[in-house]
Length: 448
Image (cartoon, rainbow, N blue to C red; front, side, top):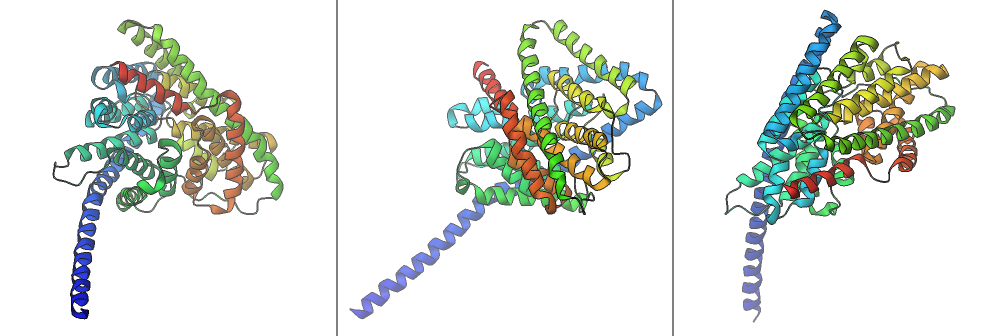
């Protein structure tokens, strides 16, 4: 009897050993598509960032050559960017984040054709080309939202390429991971990418996709890091020796930027809804032309600070002695973002929102005659407040800014700014800008 028990125990050990090997093999097979997608995402993010930077340099070159040229370049760029979108990939317009959210919500076998309209290689390609034309023409847009849609499209396509015998992998998890990996590689903010996926994109329990999400973000970030080298999106601003009373300055900046961010989103949504009365191609093209001429006028009247994503403004406000801006610059940035986004061409709103918040922080600091280091803190709080106001994602906002500067000493100031901005943004609208657009995309894709 003892011998029989020993045999049974031995057989059980062998079975458990084989089972554990099979589980290990299955886990590797499940992880492999995420790894491939993350590597490709990292590479595409780097290439896109380089192209975007070159396009902005082209804008600066035109400005120094003759700012009056924008009355030719901007209309041609805006019309070309808009035409690419409406002709080849209508769902590539705008930021890209609402499309990803809509795709996540629609993901099931019955809606595969709808998800493919929102996320595809064609959409990703048109997204890149349209946004590059917009930024070259001086459009106030960013590349971060587009990178998220591009990355989600890559992960979705890899999921579709898996053979029928391959272990089944959730398409929803692939899309969420792709989006998070895209944001992480765009900003070099891995923690921000993870929090963004949880806070903004999905309500799914974290345990269901945490391993895939972590590995995707890590590999995409490392791929970009190995190509670009160690870098921070903004750098290391001086933030030492700041008096504790500065929190009194954080309060009004956070409240006002939260209200401004939320208001900007509401105005964009209002304009988009009113644009529905434009039926003919001529009417739509005329609207684009008017928007382009307004942006060109900004360049001529107010200067180059009103053009592009605004990263240079953030860098100047944090790392040079030219910190305090004229009062009209934040207003121009906000109005320019509204105009650029409402054209219907591709372009994100993350970087413009951050730059608008930074500009307001710089203006406010000038009014208050704050010191160099105190101004840096107020600029960063303005960035957090404005981004929170439009996205209504306070955790993502303060973590992104914290990772961009690699400064944990001000985390409580940034958290406080996000909290206040989120509370007061609710006065303007209860839902985020992206949630409203997500609903519009779902309705549109269901109709089409």
